[in-house]
Image 1 (cartoon, protein in one colour):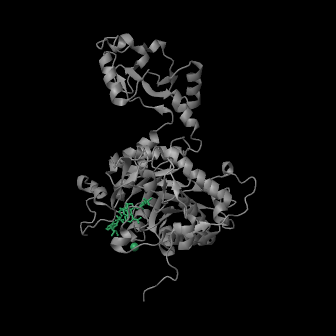
Image 2 (tube, protein in one colour; image 1 turned 60 degrees about the horizontal axis):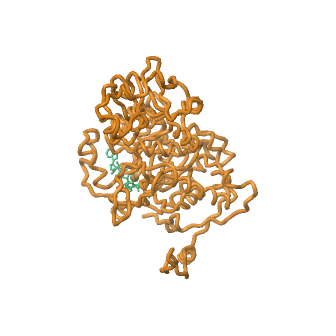
Length: 514
Ligand SMILES: NC(=O)C1=CN([C@@H]2O[C@H](COP(=O)(O)OP(=O)(O)OC[C@H]3O[C@@H](n4cnc5c(N)ncnc54)[C@H](O)[C@@H]3O)[C@@H](O)[C@H]2O)C=CC1
Ligand SMILES: O=c1[nH]c(=O)c2[nH+]cn([C@@H]3O[C@H](COP(=O)(O)O)[C@@H](O)[C@H]3O)c2[nH]1
Ligand SMILES: [K+]
């Protein structure tokens, strides 16, 4: 006989937090958002345990969805610099995905590999053409014109006069030559580089190796940007932390390549994780010689969670059909309201911890359509959240920025859409996929309003989270989960929470309905 749940399945927008006493030390500056990423052992007497006991943590509880339109290398770098974690999308060739992971791991804040380089026999005409193409006015001159060739000089716009200096002038006659340039030696850190920049009043510090080959450029303005990222999520070698998506088919080839590339944590990407395919995938990752972390999912209930935990998952992702581009509930009728799913799985996680002393973090994936939904998810017991739409809006996401009806938009398409699935037609890596199944789309191709830089937006979002936590008397995510009091809002009280019974006024004094 079919089992019917007593309670309807609910989602974040149906709940509100009721404030607790805010003590005077409970201010946003004192809020610590550190979250565990992977399983760890702790004293089951303290539920939930201190997240800093986990072997992999993040300083803000936010991850970006493993989607083609969300998590490429640029977004992964920007998010890790703000303290979060990206999962580079797995719906691409294995080599391509590994290359993205490598790009994130090789990123050194403040140290950039020069992208504008010429040989000494190039001309001013070449300089102008290159400046135009890259938008960068600092050009490194190396013997072979490569970013790591023997370094012989530098050209900036101060070295020539447009309209006066002939375009045919060779670079070697106008560049600042090596002997007049202050350089750093490879191995110096950003602070030391910055010291040199200030001492010698430089705009750019070239960093060379013992053979005088160029390695990096350090720009004065980038040091300031580094100072603005105090929460950066880095490993013990100060490299940014990055995750990578995998699937339950080509994992035997994909996982070793990603681990080799330096992925800190993997995650199986699927709408439905309660399957033996995922059990096998986890077992494979755990059988590798090298230790590797792997998350699994998605699940929406206690049974699915326990199955993946017992299979060895390092974290479990929660959510079926709640994503903004999802049509799974409509197409297949599977899923559960995101709040109900998180509440049940968080309870199962706590019981498992109390029984075994092993804490397995959970991630609420999809359906965050307002910033405060993050706080609600965390209050309900999610250790961190995953978002797609949210990040697709930013400069750093891979989708194109386009103008639609006089407004800038970014493209955002679901991983279950035909657009995303097309990669397999051009890649030979995953030919086993669904040969035996008829295909139907489970996601849409869409636009989202362009919103600018990731950091600017995430700073505001997290300010709201911290502020709400203070309303709830919480300065850590553990506090929040332990103390939060949530109430279901009736449809009428949701109406009451919006603007009502007033006419809105614009800057010219005109009025309109809310
Ligand atoms: N979170 C959500 O609500 C949803 C997410 N998505 C996203 O769309 C993408 C595709 O998701 P899915 O279609 O669920 O991918 P999937 O690859 O997990 O599953 C597709 C089908 O293949 C089967 N399968 C998996 N491994 C297999 C193996 N080794 N051998 C034979 N059959 C196997 C599965 O049982 C399923 O029927 C993912 O990126 C996912 O995150 C799609 C729908 C909903
Ligand atoms: O039904 C679906 N069809 C799709 O094509 C699809 N692509 C992604 N996802 C899932 O949605 C999450 C992102 O959701 P948001 O945009 O709401 O943040 C992601 O993290 C995924 O869990 C999909 N679900
Ligand atoms: K299943």
